[in-house]
Image (cartoon, rainbow, N blue to C red):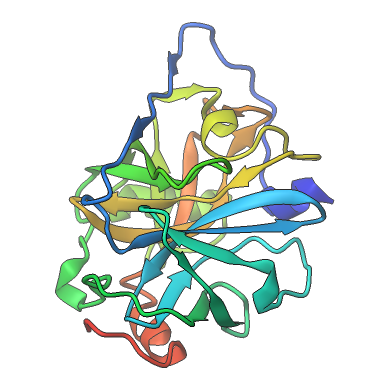
Length: 249
C-alpha cells in the first residue's frame, strides 16, 4: 500500500555504482526562507513533515501525502523555524487534493510568500536550485543543492515517465544518488518509519511543490534521477482562487 502512496508510480530496479556521490545536507538560516513553516502530522502512525508557505497572515499553502486517509485540522501541528506554534483552525484542498491550505488561529507577522507571476523562474534553461525539507525531529529547515531541468528537457522526461508535459511539472535532478531518498524522503517505500516532503527553490523563491519521485529503495535512480514537483507558476491562478486570502499576487 505504501509503495503506491509514496511514489504513486515508477520505482525502477537499477543498481547504483558505489562511486556515485553522497547527498550533502546543510541547515538553512531562518532568515533565508522566513515564509516557510513546518507541518507535522501522522498517518497510520507514520510521522510526516511538509514545508508550508505563508501566503498571507492567516493562511498557508502545502502539498500533503495522505495515503488516502480522511484528514482533519486536529491531525496537524504547524510550527515556524523559530519554534512558534500556529494552531490550525481549518484545512481544505482542491478537488484533486494536489494543493492544501490551512487557516491559522494565530497571525503570521512576517513577509508572506510572493505569488506574483514575475517572482517565478521561467525555466527556459537548467538552473541550480535548492531542495528544502524538514526532518521529523526538528524545526530546522534543511537544504540540498540540486538542478532543475530546462522545460524542453523536462518535457521529454516528464512525458516519458509521468505521461504529462513540463508545462505543469518541474524536473529536479541530482548527481548525488546514493542514500538520496533515505536522507531526503523516506527510509522505506513499502513500510516507512518517516516521510519528509520537500519543495524546490531558485534564488530564495520556492517554485515547486512535491508531486512524486524516482526512488530505488533508499537511493535515487541512477537511470532516472528525478524528483517531480508541481510548478507553482502554472497553477498560480488556481491556487489564488482556492485560498481565501493571498497577500502578494
